[in-house]
Length: 78
Image 1 (cartoon, rainbow, N blue to C red):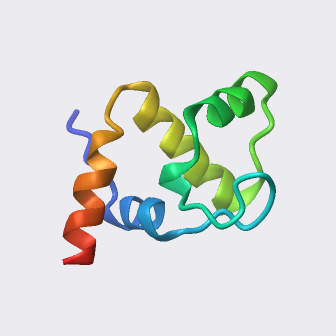
Image 2 (cartoon, rainbow, N blue to C red; image 1 turned 30 degrees about the vertical axis):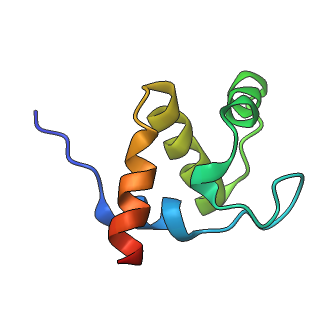
Image 3 (spheres, helix red, strand yellow; image 1 turned 120 degrees about the horizontal axis):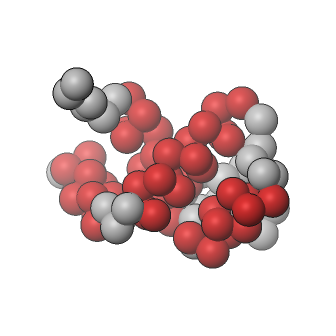
């Protein structure tokens, strides 16, 4: 089985801004891993698309792939 990332989701991770809370105004991909771990351990993910995006960021960061965000931002901003 070949799993490929969804380009639309990756684009959303580097362009969507956190709409509320302590990290309001920060890009979703720039939310600290500690907050994402807290959401995971407390099962406190926001509902809907925002929660889905945060879960994706969590998986990416948990697997040490967060360096991809800098590369994606560079490509998107060029």
